[in-house]
Image 1 (cartoon, rainbow, N blue to C red):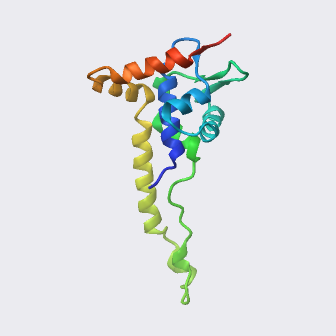
Image 2 (image 1 turned 120 degrees about the vertical axis):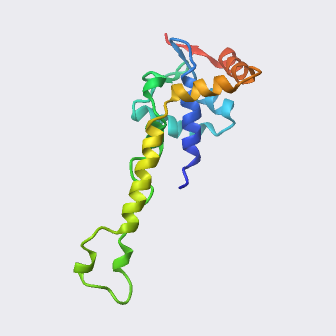
Length: 166
């Protein structure tokens, strides 16, 4: 399974937004610069996150983004579905019915076993992503940062680009 680059950018952006102080927000340009990605591409994914109720958008020249709910209530699955959409990765087209020697419909009464196996795998994948929150990811990152470099990088971003709700 291959997820688009937008999923990684969205998860990292939500993770950064989870570290904002109360009333703080960051512009899309600041998030894009921090991650070394295209602002226009990131904006597309931030809009998807906003439509999904994961982030709030504050319009205007002093505007930006902040979380719409606590990081403990945002799962990795929430972010993936916001960016990629709800469709399963595997979509059965019933190609077993194609070809030069099609069988009668009675041979296709049972669900396609390949589709059934793929949907079970999708369910396991989604359940795992559902069980991991942004808050947990951030806690793991902070626990693994022995020399404080990750925290220092985040603080530098905040010092340079933090905005406040008016």
